[in-house]
Length: 472
Image 1 (spheres, rainbow, N blue to C red):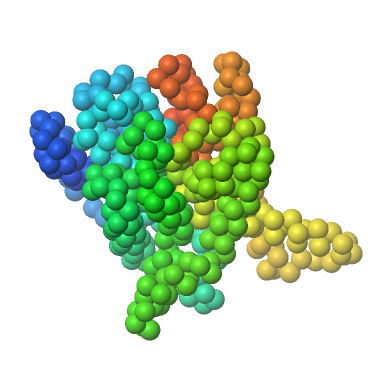
Image 2 (cartoon, rainbow, N blue to C red; image 1 turned 120 degrees about the vertical axis):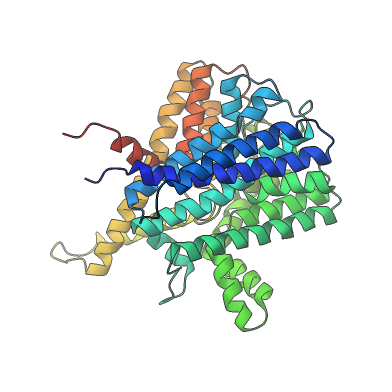
């Protein structure tokens, strides 16, 4: 078996530190604009990470990354970013170190759980945590899809559902990452303009856009998105959906539309006809109707929180418990499924749900054939892909069940425990009220692990952890 080449990994971790340096520099400018003296603190952190990152990155020449290197890099990148993003919470908001790490991990994994008192937090802290989600969302799409391209694993076939027959996804990883970044920037700009047009104000528009496009869900008000007007909340619903769409689809549709001089129309048509998008909207509408009918809540409020759960954003205008036991159960299922593969959303992804349903139907049909019938090669390849899909789904289910048992053993009600750990594993951030500064440290640690490993769909983290075991 190959071993992780940590010199190569550290090179790319140096790149993560340089991204953190740019983030701190941006927050420093935001603090200056807000008239806060903390601008010097952010600038100092930025310089420190720039120097360390540059030294790490330049210390190793460029090398081809193996699948094991990519798994280790992806896993350690989120760990490093969460640690590097924690100091402002410790030194500027006086949070305990574990709580600060929890808040930072929630940010970079685009989860949205919070232990911060947003009413007393300075504007720069609120901007810093929203920016952490924006960076984490872009990093997740770029790093994890690149990991699939490097590894050549069967999961890559799921992304090909978005590509026409005979069309290559992206011939080079660098081209892919560049396309994802430009698309992410474009969606962010459109979303910010949309919230500004709805009267959200510049600061709110920036923070809610960064947390919305990344499907992160950090809010700048104690009441969450409930303190936004109905117009801004409707815009936020659209923004959550934009973040839950496969970013490869955006890039491909725009490139195809440029040939016909109507790229925007091509993107709208591609998104509106995409199978994952249709499934996302259909499931959300069905779940919202079920929640509204079962709880007596308004359809609009039910629709907002359903889209928030399905896209794994975690914005809320009402507490989940207000939708009753049926509503909590439906939302838990929506959080488990999540949004589109290749998007910033979490969960097992809609394409896997579709694949599972299709494979079960095919299996039922195959069982009706005579025993001597041999599966053709195409069906054998589909069976291998189905096994891969079931492995990821089983990992999510396994860690959710084990974690829920831990929370129930600690005295929490079972439905609330399952809701909370599913929200963490799916990087959603909706809370049943369990997450709070008073939560025991061990349980905070469980949620930190779920946010981190769940963000990467567990497998890369487990592959890297397995590489640490002694070899015989």
